[in-house]
Length: 240
Image (cartoon, rainbow, N blue to C red; front, side, top):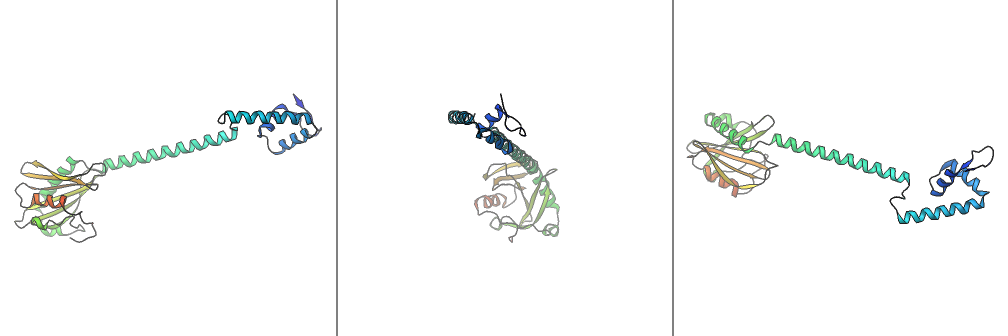
């Protein structure tokens, strides 16, 4: 059905009438329809009927009655949220993967502790005193004094901090510390024997600790008790 207005304006179609009734017709086309309806009182009654019908449909089915523009906007918003969520998931997965490759396993840290102990037993005292490392624990009550330390490589992407102590008999022990963000806390130390050596291990505050020394070294187990039962270790900025 076509409705003709002035000769210089395009005819008003039934689609225009329906769009005007729904409120989705805008701009000059809506003004054209209003001018057409100004001379058609009967058409105004039909418009009012359509609008009452649309209102009843929106009340009964609010989701289905949403205007196309609102539906499209809501769809774009959901799509943006989905993209943002996917980006967060990717970043979290990448962070967890990086943590996994930069955190040495317990076995890797034990092996590094054995190697570090062998090197420390043959090192000159002056070579251990150099460096910025500070003692994380005071083992004076166990008869051990801090000599020095530094960083050691534990794997392709992992490293650990090394701390060397010595008792009055000249026997040395090595304490290694590495990150352990994915490992649960285990503040009570446990022991593992490796031939004549003893490895004392515990985890606390996101750090994995291994204290290595000869099984007969005086003060070894007492030092582990001090580390796990005493106050938290000092930060790198504090003195020994």
